Image 1 (cartoon, rainbow, N blue to C red):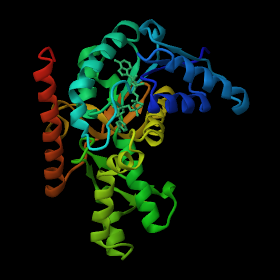
Image 2 (cartoon, rainbow, N blue to C red; image 1 turned 90 degrees about the vertical axis):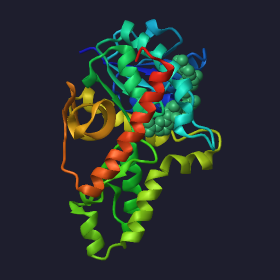
Image 3 (cartoon, rainbow, N blue to C red; image 1 turned 120 degrees about the vertical axis):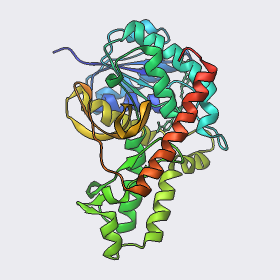
Length: 319
Ligand code: TXD
């Protein structure tokens, strides 16, 4: 069986890390693409030279021509500008929307059958625009944010409770950003909901609220430490988990930015919800009951995403 082909559109910090992880996991042959000629070629060659040492088989090539992504099974999009300190995700909107237009055209022409994972910020608006610019089926275009946000929540909880990260599951809904909705009653330690753990005295509600806030601010915390860019190891690992579920038809239940057509009362928008990811792309959207407070928080988050989509339409009326 021929190897799968993975196209990484954008070969910056996340793109390079994606290439390294995809190689180590032998997910397929990898094409790095970027407009900065030399960067994708250099990173591809460097990672390829690690393959004899690590013992993985994959071809890694770099390109600055979209023809190189022809026939890709998966495209992971990080192309654009990353946040600098003091810059919000929304500041990026205007610049990155133009990038999505080019990327969408490239994917439409050369990889119309691919499963597409968008990472570029502001995430929920960019994945929405990318789906429209590319014209690919809505179930084949998703955004990565929830896996990362819930990984951050899981790490902070595991440190608080002094238990393995493996035994902590977390559930985060809504848009990627300050309005994301971490759901305590659906997040657990070995199946015990956080709401019960508070009753059991594992931590106070106040402490849990602090952890939730730190999760919401998780991206900004890294930006303020790095000073020259945003997070890339955990975002890359999160997107690779999604790509792997598609390529191996694992049918993982993961929080992703998915196209909603009425679910959760939302129409024609991309918002973070739990979905089943398999060979059919988004095979199912998991719709859970929300209580009043959760619904309010979710609606607020959806409102923020809707505002970003409107801002996109003002810039690009064709959307
Ligand atoms: O949870 C999430 N979704 C995120 C999103 C978590 C962390 C970072 N997130 C966003 O990912 C971040 O705000 C950025 O919008 C993207 C990519 O972050 P990265 O850290 O990889 O940014 P880099 O290192 O600046 O890389 C971007 C590359 C860079 O090499 C540019 O030359 C290239 O994108 N670029 C382009 N490639 C192709 N085509 C065009 N038009 C283009 N413009 C820039």
